[in-house]
Image 1: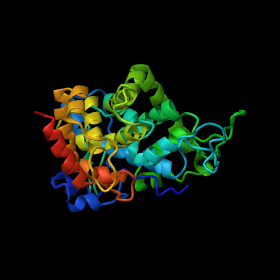
Image 2 (image 1 turned 180 degrees about the vertical axis):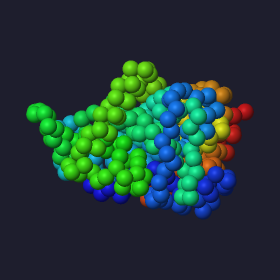
Image 3 (image 1 turned 30 degrees about the vertical axis):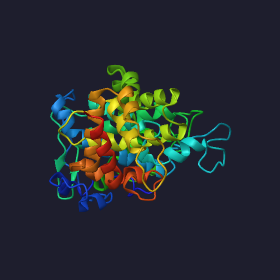
Image 4 (image 1 turned 120 degrees about the horizontal axis):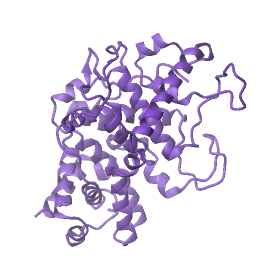
Length: 381
């Protein structure tokens, strides 16, 4: 494993994005960059829940950090997010059959097919970020204090284990002085925290090798204690299963069960939902409802682009299945996706939603979003 490739959670384009509201700005073309300077010193005040306005202000940075590290771990095959149909060992090189429908639509980490990032964000909102924390600026971009980033790592770990506990493939290389049948250990939890460190912080911490086992084990023990604190003080089950993205998935499933949409349409809608979740997190507004997210996704897959639409748009059906508030919410999130602001713009630029080779890009490209926005306006009356 490379030490330099998994660390930074800072996007250098963030400064430009803070003041740019154009949906087709140069910022959208910026890629993820890794910072090479030290982060500010760790904070030493108590962690507690902040006000809703503070939560909204830091939410874009929280999601961007979690999504970046999650994608890194997936791309390195340390976390296996494939949709197996049963059988096989689950190892990265195992040719076991996968579920073709889910794989076709949700193969990109950006779509968060297992709701890992969505769950981690929900946990972070109520536990990880102290009330006074704000993303701070250095010469290369924005970042949280290191203590906050370690807590974000704990949230990501808990959410991953809830969804995919047996699908980690970290190398086992660490032994303890005490004999144990489970050795060698992966110290996966510590590596996730290590991944949230900047390059300079990793350099100070030391390499991820058995020669540095003392520091690695100390980080692991610290983070394990934080995990216990999280699961004993917060209603983890509700946060992981009742966030807006999961509830939107339930609404889509209801549409599928009622034969309003096909299986392919429902999966395409689910793949698009995270785009609207990210776009809505501009640091100022309120979170969209699950119904608004599902409605927006349905409008997008109804767009007659260069590919055949998955759903034939029907105003009567939309009005029957979604409330007026949900339809208006759908208009809002589509508009935000068409004109992303601040860190939301930077985050989207690093996802499959800006990749014209992605299977559903025709439904989320600017032209398609403009058509969907017009359709949303038509059902908001």
